[in-house]
Image (cartoon, rainbow, N blue to C red):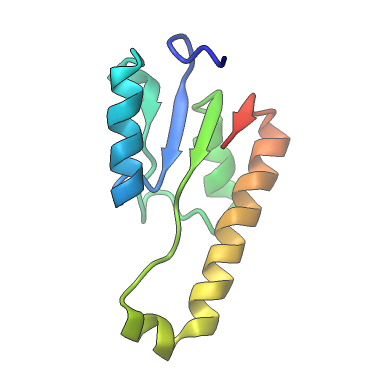
Length: 106
């Protein structure tokens, strides 16, 4: 079992449905609010390697839930843009986690 109480936890996508639920659960598990790092766009653009590295320096464990979302109409009108953004977000976060030596990525 992963001990969370002494860890700094980065939660990407924290303003979304799933992210807000994860934060509530972390708090219920005894994680202190000040140990939960919540990167938000545009301060942290997770398509940027530099932004990903900057945020991951603040945490031990990464719970990666961020994605570029929009309405169905938006996604139908610009499918390539959504696909590329989400590929970049995932790839850059994983590479930054590898470089930064993150303890765990979920």
